[in-house]
Image 1 (cartoon, one colour):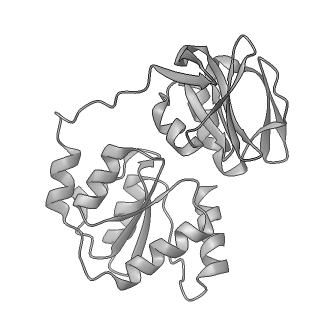
Image 2: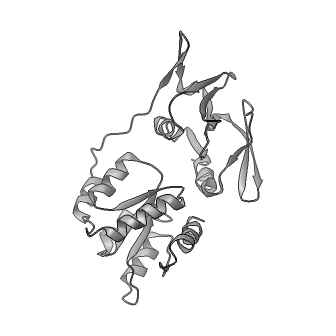
Image 3: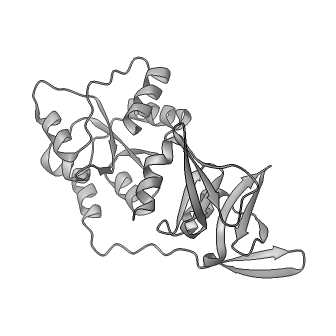
Length: 241
Protein backbone atom coordinates (compact mmCIF):
# COMPACT_ATOMS: atom_id res chain seq x y z
CA UNK A 1 0.00 0.00 0.00
CA UNK A 2 2.83 2.40 0.87
CA UNK A 3 4.59 1.61 -2.41
CA UNK A 4 1.42 2.24 -4.42
CA UNK A 5 0.78 5.51 -2.62
CA UNK A 6 4.32 6.78 -3.18
CA UNK A 7 4.31 5.66 -6.83
CA UNK A 8 1.06 7.57 -7.37
CA UNK A 9 2.45 10.73 -5.73
CA UNK A 10 5.60 10.56 -7.85
CA UNK A 11 3.58 10.12 -11.04
CA UNK A 12 1.35 13.09 -10.16
CA UNK A 13 4.01 15.53 -8.97
CA UNK A 14 7.28 14.31 -10.51
CA UNK A 15 6.44 12.87 -13.94
CA UNK A 16 10.12 13.03 -14.97
CA UNK A 17 10.94 10.36 -12.35
CA UNK A 18 10.47 6.72 -13.40
CA UNK A 19 9.90 3.95 -10.85
CA UNK A 20 12.24 1.23 -12.16
CA UNK A 21 11.79 -1.32 -9.38
CA UNK A 22 10.24 -2.11 -6.01
CA UNK A 23 11.05 -4.53 -3.20
CA UNK A 24 9.32 -5.33 0.08
CA UNK A 25 12.17 -7.09 1.86
CA UNK A 26 15.86 -6.70 2.66
CA UNK A 27 16.70 -9.79 0.59
CA UNK A 28 14.64 -8.56 -2.38
CA UNK A 29 16.24 -5.11 -2.28
CA UNK A 30 19.76 -6.56 -2.02
CA UNK A 31 19.12 -8.91 -4.96
CA UNK A 32 17.74 -6.07 -7.10
CA UNK A 33 20.60 -3.68 -6.28
CA UNK A 34 23.28 -6.32 -6.90
CA UNK A 35 21.92 -7.14 -10.35
CA UNK A 36 24.23 -5.33 -12.84
CA UNK A 37 21.28 -4.89 -15.20
CA UNK A 38 19.63 -2.53 -12.71
CA UNK A 39 20.57 1.09 -12.10
CA UNK A 40 18.91 3.74 -9.98
CA UNK A 41 19.46 7.40 -9.06
CA UNK A 42 17.22 7.68 -5.99
CA UNK A 43 16.00 5.05 -3.53
CA UNK A 44 12.94 5.58 -1.32
CA UNK A 45 13.56 3.20 1.56
CA UNK A 46 11.27 2.29 4.46
CA UNK A 47 12.96 1.46 7.76
CA UNK A 48 10.97 -1.69 8.55
CA UNK A 49 10.81 -4.25 5.74
CA UNK A 50 9.18 -7.67 5.59
CA UNK A 51 12.27 -9.57 6.76
CA UNK A 52 14.12 -7.01 8.86
CA UNK A 53 15.42 -3.48 9.21
CA UNK A 54 16.58 -1.69 6.07
CA UNK A 55 20.04 -0.85 7.46
CA UNK A 56 21.10 -4.41 6.68
CA UNK A 57 20.91 -3.41 3.00
CA UNK A 58 23.73 -0.90 3.51
CA UNK A 59 25.87 -3.65 5.03
CA UNK A 60 25.43 -5.89 1.99
CA UNK A 61 25.42 -3.43 -0.91
CA UNK A 62 27.64 -0.47 -1.76
CA UNK A 63 24.89 2.05 -2.49
CA UNK A 64 25.88 4.97 -4.71
CA UNK A 65 22.35 6.31 -5.26
CA UNK A 66 20.78 9.09 -3.23
CA UNK A 67 18.53 7.72 -0.48
CA UNK A 68 15.31 9.13 0.98
CA UNK A 69 14.08 7.24 4.04
CA UNK A 70 10.37 6.99 4.83
CA UNK A 71 9.62 6.45 8.49
CA UNK A 72 7.28 7.14 11.36
CA UNK A 73 8.90 9.78 13.55
CA UNK A 74 11.71 8.57 15.79
CA UNK A 75 14.25 11.15 16.94
CA UNK A 76 17.06 8.61 17.30
CA UNK A 77 16.56 7.21 13.80
CA UNK A 78 16.43 10.72 12.34
CA UNK A 79 19.79 11.51 13.94
CA UNK A 80 21.19 8.44 12.20
CA UNK A 81 19.84 9.59 8.84
CA UNK A 82 21.30 13.06 9.32
CA UNK A 83 24.66 11.63 10.38
CA UNK A 84 24.71 9.48 7.26
CA UNK A 85 23.72 12.34 4.92
CA UNK A 86 20.39 10.66 4.17
CA UNK A 87 17.21 12.62 3.54
CA UNK A 88 13.95 11.40 5.06
CA UNK A 89 10.17 11.68 4.83
CA UNK A 90 7.80 11.19 7.75
CA UNK A 91 4.88 8.84 7.19
CA UNK A 92 2.23 9.24 6.01
CA UNK A 93 3.97 10.91 3.08
CA UNK A 94 2.18 13.91 1.60
CA UNK A 95 2.78 15.77 -1.65
CA UNK A 96 4.37 18.87 -0.10
CA UNK A 97 6.87 16.88 1.97
CA UNK A 98 7.72 14.74 -1.06
CA UNK A 99 8.27 17.88 -3.13
CA UNK A 100 10.74 19.24 -0.57
CA UNK A 101 12.63 15.95 -0.23
CA UNK A 102 12.97 15.48 -3.98
CA UNK A 103 14.15 19.08 -4.38
CA UNK A 104 16.82 18.58 -1.69
CA UNK A 105 18.01 15.35 -3.32
CA UNK A 106 18.25 17.01 -6.74
CA UNK A 107 20.40 19.78 -5.26
CA UNK A 108 22.49 17.62 -2.94
CA UNK A 109 26.05 16.74 -3.88
CA UNK A 110 26.87 14.74 -0.72
CA UNK A 111 27.13 10.96 -0.71
CA UNK A 112 25.90 8.59 1.99
CA UNK A 113 28.29 8.41 4.94
CA UNK A 114 27.87 4.69 5.60
CA UNK A 115 30.42 4.64 8.42
CA UNK A 116 28.65 7.40 10.37
CA UNK A 117 25.25 5.80 9.77
CA UNK A 118 26.30 2.34 10.90
CA UNK A 119 28.16 3.68 13.93
CA UNK A 120 25.11 5.48 15.24
CA UNK A 121 22.64 2.69 14.45
CA UNK A 122 24.90 0.10 16.10
CA UNK A 123 25.42 2.22 19.21
CA UNK A 124 23.93 0.08 21.97
CA UNK A 125 24.31 2.87 24.53
CA UNK A 126 21.73 5.08 22.85
CA UNK A 127 19.46 6.59 25.50
CA UNK A 128 15.98 5.17 25.75
CA UNK A 129 13.31 7.71 24.93
CA UNK A 130 11.35 8.92 27.94
CA UNK A 131 7.69 9.74 27.48
CA UNK A 132 5.55 12.24 29.32
CA UNK A 133 3.86 11.03 32.51
CA UNK A 134 1.37 13.86 32.99
CA UNK A 135 0.10 17.13 31.61
CA UNK A 136 -0.60 20.23 33.67
CA UNK A 137 -3.93 21.68 32.55
CA UNK A 138 -4.62 25.33 33.39
CA UNK A 139 -8.26 26.41 33.57
CA UNK A 140 -8.47 30.08 34.54
CA UNK A 141 -6.99 30.16 38.07
CA UNK A 142 -7.22 26.37 38.50
CA UNK A 143 -4.43 23.87 37.77
CA UNK A 144 -5.31 20.23 37.01
CA UNK A 145 -2.54 17.57 36.96
CA UNK A 146 -3.63 14.96 34.40
CA UNK A 147 -1.86 11.60 34.30
CA UNK A 148 -1.26 10.17 30.83
CA UNK A 149 -3.00 6.95 31.90
CA UNK A 150 -6.24 8.95 32.26
CA UNK A 151 -6.28 10.03 28.59
CA UNK A 152 -8.62 8.15 26.26
CA UNK A 153 -7.94 10.19 23.13
CA UNK A 154 -6.78 13.57 21.85
CA UNK A 155 -8.31 15.39 18.91
CA UNK A 156 -8.35 18.69 17.02
CA UNK A 157 -11.51 20.60 16.26
CA UNK A 158 -11.98 24.18 15.05
CA UNK A 159 -8.33 25.10 15.72
CA UNK A 160 -8.42 23.79 19.31
CA UNK A 161 -6.82 20.60 20.66
CA UNK A 162 -8.67 18.58 23.28
CA UNK A 163 -7.72 15.85 25.74
CA UNK A 164 -10.61 13.50 26.58
CA UNK A 165 -10.31 11.36 29.72
CA UNK A 166 -11.83 8.00 30.53
CA UNK A 167 -14.17 9.70 33.01
CA UNK A 168 -15.51 11.83 30.11
CA UNK A 169 -13.79 15.10 31.01
CA UNK A 170 -12.60 17.29 28.14
CA UNK A 171 -9.72 19.75 28.43
CA UNK A 172 -8.23 22.22 25.96
CA UNK A 173 -4.46 21.86 25.60
CA UNK A 174 -2.10 24.34 23.96
CA UNK A 175 0.32 21.78 22.49
CA UNK A 176 -0.10 20.74 18.86
CA UNK A 177 -0.99 17.14 17.97
CA UNK A 178 2.50 16.73 16.51
CA UNK A 179 4.05 17.58 19.88
CA UNK A 180 1.52 15.52 21.83
CA UNK A 181 2.18 12.53 19.60
CA UNK A 182 5.86 12.74 20.53
CA UNK A 183 4.99 13.00 24.24
CA UNK A 184 2.97 9.76 24.28
CA UNK A 185 4.33 6.22 24.36
CA UNK A 186 3.57 4.63 20.95
CA UNK A 187 3.02 1.29 22.67
CA UNK A 188 -0.12 2.78 24.23
CA UNK A 189 -1.22 5.51 21.80
CA UNK A 190 -1.64 5.67 18.02
CA UNK A 191 -2.23 8.65 15.76
CA UNK A 192 -5.04 7.36 13.58
CA UNK A 193 -5.30 10.57 11.52
CA UNK A 194 -3.96 14.10 11.40
CA UNK A 195 -6.63 15.16 13.87
CA UNK A 196 -6.83 12.28 16.36
CA UNK A 197 -4.63 10.19 18.68
CA UNK A 198 -6.22 7.33 20.60
CA UNK A 199 -5.28 5.14 23.54
CA UNK A 200 -5.32 1.39 23.02
CA UNK A 201 -7.56 1.11 26.11
CA UNK A 202 -10.18 3.44 24.61
CA UNK A 203 -10.89 1.26 21.55
CA UNK A 204 -14.16 -0.61 21.98
CA UNK A 205 -14.78 -1.88 18.43
CA UNK A 206 -13.58 -1.41 14.83
CA UNK A 207 -15.62 -1.55 11.62
CA UNK A 208 -14.12 -1.78 8.11
CA UNK A 209 -15.35 0.89 5.68
CA UNK A 210 -14.04 0.92 2.07
CA UNK A 211 -10.34 1.15 2.81
CA UNK A 212 -10.74 2.87 6.15
CA UNK A 213 -11.50 1.71 9.66
CA UNK A 214 -14.14 3.32 11.87
CA UNK A 215 -13.52 3.16 15.61
CA UNK A 216 -16.06 3.16 18.38
CA UNK A 217 -14.33 4.58 21.43
CA UNK A 218 -15.06 4.60 25.13
CA UNK A 219 -15.99 7.23 26.10
CA UNK A 220 -17.93 7.79 22.89
CA UNK A 221 -16.54 10.54 20.66
CA UNK A 222 -18.53 13.51 19.40
CA UNK A 223 -17.04 13.05 15.91
CA UNK A 224 -16.61 10.15 13.48
CA UNK A 225 -13.37 8.48 14.52
CA UNK A 226 -11.72 6.88 11.50
CA UNK A 227 -8.25 5.56 10.71
CA UNK A 228 -6.74 7.25 7.64
CA UNK A 229 -6.26 4.93 4.65
CA UNK A 230 -2.50 5.46 4.72
CA UNK A 231 -2.33 4.39 8.38
CA UNK A 232 -4.55 1.30 8.31
CA UNK A 233 -1.74 -1.26 7.95
CA UNK A 234 0.39 0.35 10.67
CA UNK A 235 -2.67 0.61 12.94
CA UNK A 236 -3.55 -3.07 12.55
CA UNK A 237 0.06 -4.04 13.25
CA UNK A 238 0.03 -1.82 16.35
CA UNK A 239 -3.14 -3.52 17.60
CA UNK A 240 -1.46 -6.92 17.43
CA UNK A 241 1.62 -5.98 19.46
